[in-house]
Amino acid sequence: MSDMNPWLAMIISVAIIGLSAFFVAIEFALVAARRYRLEEAAETSASARAALKSARDLSLLLAGSQLGITLCTLALGAITKPAVHHLLEPLFHGWMPDAVSYVVSFVVSLIVVTFLHLVVGEMAPKSWAISHPEKSATMLAIPMRAFMWFTRPVLVVLNGMANWCLHRVGVEAVDEVSGGHSADDLRELVEHSAKAGSLDPERRAQLATALEVNSRPLRDIITPKDELAGVAPDAGLDTIKRVARESGHLRLVVGEDEPFGVLHVRDALTSGSETTAAELMRPVLTLDAATPIYAALSIMRESRTHLALVEEEENLIGLVTLQDMLDRLLLTGEHPAAV
Image 1 (cartoon, rainbow, N blue to C red):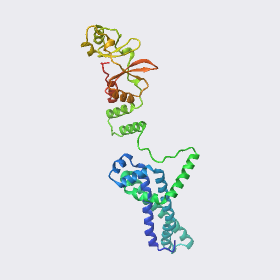
Image 2: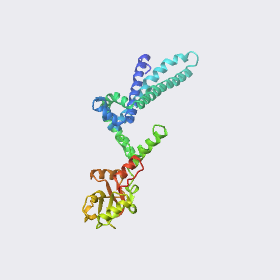
Image 3: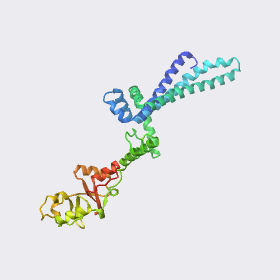
Image 4: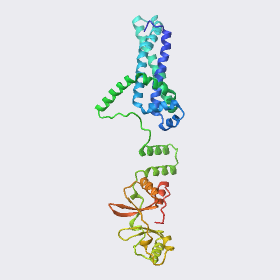
């Protein structure tokens, strides 16, 4: 490229470095962009819709970015480096031998081009994209989609070859980055925020507990069987009132070895003197002890019940109330006496 006008080569070089910056920025922007923000913006922005579509086709986008960066690097080597070399060589030619001046100008031109490409064409756009991922993604998505459309056959082949190589070493490629966070990810975020001072200890404890109910089983929060207040199915009103008064509980389990249901003491207060516990009891929901707290909470809300018997291997081990779950979720540490 020594025959090209050096100043024209410089103009072309600036354009090449700009293209390299474009490919680097869109690559990092779509990896760092938060999916939910793009989805919100996509309702009113064509650029955001293009960014969201690219995020869902991330493997091809990354292939396109890498192809673009590689082409820019080759172009800089073919155009910019010879042009810089051509400009610098006369500066060294007058005070050192020709062979030495050629080598020195070659090395200096290589350093200059590499520096410009590394700093302006890669590091600066990378930092900008990471700092403003959604903004940079929406700004650059449409031209990147055009480039991907134009080079799609090549990208499909390159991406397929890369996936084949990964498969040969036991790695399954994915086409998009997960848009959500697992419970473990959220726990790490909570702990990191607490250590950084963004969350006070009380708020951290509440968030950690709320995440804990995602996997913690019912058996951890039940009122044990031996602490339950109960009456026999044939118990009369006097017995019901006495047990309620002695235990302080408003709900009593009906059944001896095997519970049949639960009665509320207020029903006994408005019933006839001959009424038995079996007549007052209501069917009660039964849940397995291994049921996660969050799942049990949903089941109880859907069935409109405030308490449930908890069994393990078909044996009663205790009782849980909706209030127990809410107390655990809100970290109040209180358990109701109305069991």
